[in-house]
Length: 101
Image (cartoon, rainbow, N blue to C red; front, side, top):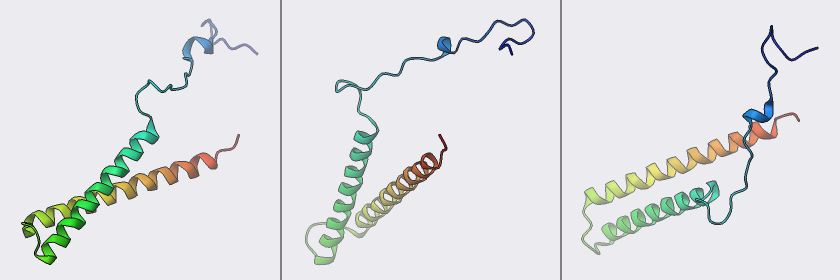
């Protein structure tokens, strides 16, 4: 059996594959670094919102209802984003673990 199709030259897989290099410490941050940074930012947003709500309820500070509501909504959206990323990671893990080798 030949790997040519009606006169076309054979396909050389090495011609189309690029070598995979491992990331080094000097390269751009990887997936885990970006994920950790995003989780830290979401935690900071949550902490800020919690502090603003606490200041508003106790009467300390100059927090107005509008800024507290905006902070609470930002915290909610960041939490939802983190949950969606988690769901995608879990789904990807399930897909990969279900592959047959």
